[in-house]
Length: 212
Ligand SMILES: [Zn+2]
Image 1 (cartoon, rainbow, N blue to C red):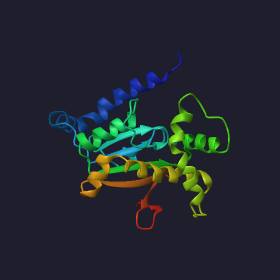
Image 2: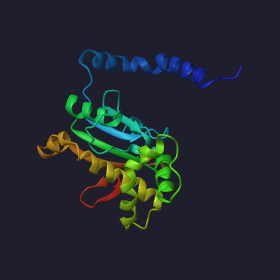
Image 3: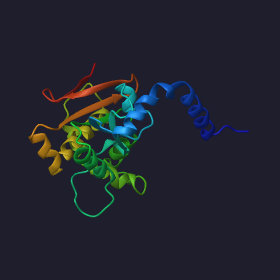
Image 4: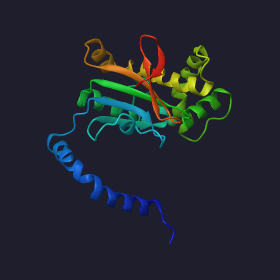
């Protein structure tokens, strides 16, 4: 019989219950009794290689994570629609009162690749990917202004989308309010899949640097 992903998940879950869950049970009990109280919201890409909890060595309950195509934060648009990312942002900021928001870009991003193709005049990809990625169009111009010659166009665009998402976060009035009163801070990060390292956007230099 052919082994399916569901078979893999079942055996993985059995391993987890036997080997790892005993260590986590007290934590889950505490989180269930007291509710969650994450300190940070992370906005990362859905890419299967990007795992914020793993790269920061954090436990369940530590990070409130939103993953979407290309870690894009749309601008504040209080009109009817299905604003999944904005809804998660609202809950993290107003409900959970996180102290920090992290936008995590990454290398080899398929969504950014689609964005660059569209910028080169190719037809939008898919029914939903093209319109979603069009939110990030200003990042293409931002990347062109990036003078860092040590990186290629893909990296510059991926990093520009992090900058754009940080800018868009500041269009939400309840985000800027909290930044102004010192209860909320924004941070940009970039994950290099080839070596597993994280870079952070140094706000003083406005440059991505090794985070270790
Ligand atoms: Zn991606």
